[in-house]
Length: 126
Image (cartoon, rainbow, N blue to C red; front, top):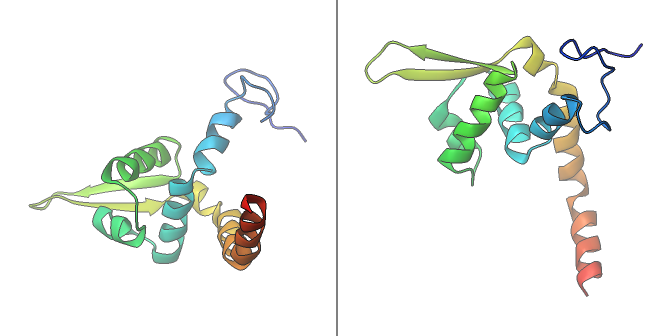
């Protein structure tokens, strides 16, 4: 069964340049998105500073941008607690948790095959 994009009435097709699935695929496939989702899958609810510490090397700008995009796409919720200073927490929605299997599989595959990839890179640059 083919999914129909409600906004256009056209079939969902990532190979079509005008299909919104392309934009979502671009978001999901991003390095920081994969790491944010994987961290939230492992830890559950996390504060911004905890995410920043967990994901080494991410700039404040990129983490903020990634979190905003994930929230706008419905993959996570942002909860602001009225304390001083305000406490902000991020948690995956059911839609975000539905990415658990593919995201975890991708991370595990990368970790398992990194040596083969590095060997191929070294051979290509030699």
